[in-house]
Image (tube, rainbow, N blue to C red):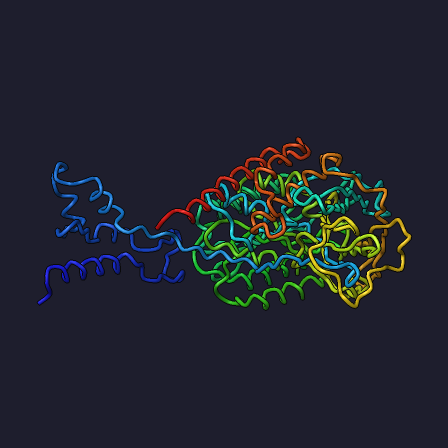
Length: 565
């Protein structure tokens, strides 16, 4: 027979086991109900142990109030908190290393105009937690802002290149080179759009920040369309279907009514949904229009084609028909950011994360042309550093956009797309010869002199792109610009407000990723830098609040690690 102490220990184990929910597959969750971690009535079946006494939850709730402690009431109603499982998925990011210009003078990458990481990180900070480092794609934080670059005057040359260089805020021994590209903004009448709304209506989309927000967001876009545009609504869960055949954009009531009828339930066959959406886009294809699928989902594909690479291959094959794919991410807990970003890249589109109706307004209304109308395809940037002037350099961000040097001139290599009026910003931290900012020792047997030692050039920027109207097999076009010694500014205080905002965004991203290259520069310094930039972008004020949230959360986490166990 068990002793009283053994019985007590067994009771505790039984209570803890009861609190561990049995796994529930999504197939077992009826449509129209919300997934939960464990049956709700289990809370009142737990065993509460107080000292040497044993009370069930029912007995505690039935006792006179005077005989029950507040702790026992709390334990009876929430005996063993079960936190929701976090199944969010982000691709691994290893920060770009420092390169010696004498050994590897050329940096090549594909442009990225995605901004999903910024709003996704904002969502996590507003939830009171720091984001996982792999959720922070620094270039997307930098590119969230409008730096007011001068735009080209017409579409003959669809890009303007802007450069600025000043001392690095987090390292006075190095310089920060800003390379900005501003796309041509279409004026006058827009090209007609053939848009397919592909909406995930599976059971995982029931939360308020998922399907309800999807419907409200797409309604914002629908209200901007005209009779020359066409809207198709395709949905998928365990199976797929066409809810709305191609419909003129002027029939706003019909489109909104179709969206209102959507309800969530069932499993998630995203691969079949993507295939059907492309088929509908091809059915209503506009030869001289903008043909695009807009995928709205949390990315939690669990039946049908679920292989990551198979889904990417499917989209890469479908893009050959000149139909682009934009991905709009929603929700928390199971958001697949890795898949959403890769699908958009493979589909010649862009990715945004919608954390509120305000963000939906920004992406789908205020920046509608940049989101939906492509002005250049396969855009690549190559920067060659003069080793006689530059000893080291490091590209900040763009880790999953790096290309081989030979890819720059290979028109068969896929790269990024830029929408009308879109801008792209890249930042390099560089160490100039003789200023002592190097992080690596020079090669013992290598040559440190360059062929252009007497040149006043620090670097040479090249940009390749294709015009959409030239067709898939057209040759790329080239734009070039030199960065010269005379462009140097002594310190960041002499730089433009736009430069300081970009530097603050870069610091913010690097700090969220652990600050491997920022030294003693912390969030308070980033806050001061952002404040010095003033109101360059309407988001500047909110950005300051996010910096302060990150500062508070990082301090709290550091204190928790130092606290005695």
